[in-house]
Amino acid sequence: MDFRFTAVIAMPPGDVFAFFRDVDQHAGRKGTRVPVYDKLTSDPVGLGTRYREVVQLLPLVRGEIISEITDYEEGKRLGYRFSGLSMDGELTYTFEPVGQGTLVTQKQSLNPRGVLRFFSAGIGKIFSTVAAQRLDGIKALLEQTAGEAHYDTGAVL
Image (tube, rainbow, N blue to C red; front, side, top):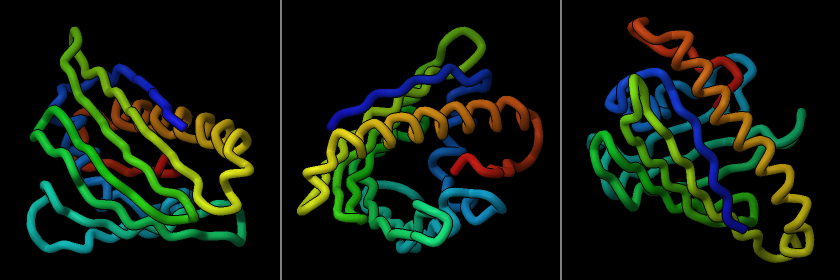
């Protein structure tokens, strides 16, 4: 399954990129879908950086995802390969200047494995809705906090 989402965020590309690059620093806030987002490598973020995230799927159900940065161009592109929850895939964000803001494009592939393959259509619909809402939430958060020294991700991650 392949997905594509876009948002224009009224902030400079470098600032938007920094938020996505440092996303592990914004997890764990009250109400977030990602209560745990650990950076597993100690070097600065770049090719090979690995993460472990815990995703809240349902009120009492959590799952773990391991990801690795496979494409990195400072200020312009972040690409990941991930595996977990009986799925694997790839995710790429691109950041392009437009007018007074940044066009963020999220391209993602999601490949259910095992028995989940039989539920691909339903998984795709749910994922599409949640991922689009997440990007819209990040847009709203960044535009609301533009000019502040930090970001409080609330429930968007």
